[in-house]
Image (cartoon, one colour):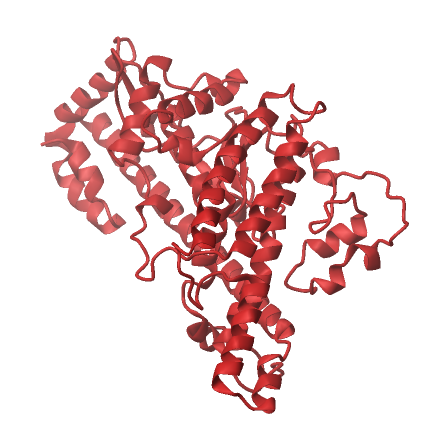
Length: 501
């Protein structure tokens, strides 16, 4: 009987006592296992160990030679004393960062951690940190432990759909009941669903600008800019921009807050100027999860991720041999090993929403701004800027194709699609004409529900953060119980070994 089979069955300390009865009979098997582990370090098979104690060391992804490998989950029992070079993985809110950190975990056997887990559970030695900051869905929770930044750039159209799938996937009507606004709610009843769609479209128009603002923030090393005009802004205005569920778009207007003729001295996020990322906030590499999924380009993307980790030997020493990189890509992407990602999510029953020509044009306009900026003489000597331009150019071509389909009528839009303010208003007016609606009804439809929806969004944000905190605490408790059981079993094994020796 193999002792490792018992190990997987441990659930509570009570079950451990049942194991004690058979420990002596199993010591020969245990010694064989230990011998196998020890001997493997001198064999041609490359294994990696990094644990807080040698007794709980476990093998990680294995290079079997000749381009073959064996995938294993990372080692979550990290020693706090091991000096690791830590990588911050940033990107506009979507599921792509998860794809990138899974590659890092598989390549090194070292674990990743979310910015919110750092915020709620404290600083740990995890070398890979996933972050949405400075987007308001993120938080600078990792203090000053990051050493380098890599940025994930996703198609703006897909990012927005993905973000809204997560934000509103419980449905608008259900949202009203679950959020349960306090008694001082702004409206006595739920605004019409058409009002929600209209507000959502306006928010998405803003998010297109947030997308570009996010890229600028990291590419420029934390330079403070306005979201909507992209002008250099003041720390006061920046702090207001970081709370979009508190202030309306009008209240954040640059000319009002900063001033039309104000000369603004460039300022940077204190996190970047104070050395909270030891290598600076500008990314050392730019990745694409969409490329990672591509059968032709995917292995090269994995190699680029591995190369970024080898910038410093403190973490680079744990990267599996380069001959196994293609195999790691195959295990994760083609064989679907590892954690589930956004790409494992079943397709929505409603299908993928469409965008109006107004909104697609706004995306192309923002992409053109970024492409022009980062292909300019100030930037085109940097590999990261060239990668941004290359990816955004491909994204722009895809969006242009969709725009052509919308303009030609091949894509038919519905009320639930992202219509944009102009298209939705035109449809509203036409609907009123067709129905010969009363003047009162028209006034009701034109009512401004902005404050209402901001309150809803703010409450939802609070609920999400509370849920993330509870998830983090629950995970931490499970880890503590697991480590406790490990210590108990290791102690009994040592005692049994002593008695039989």
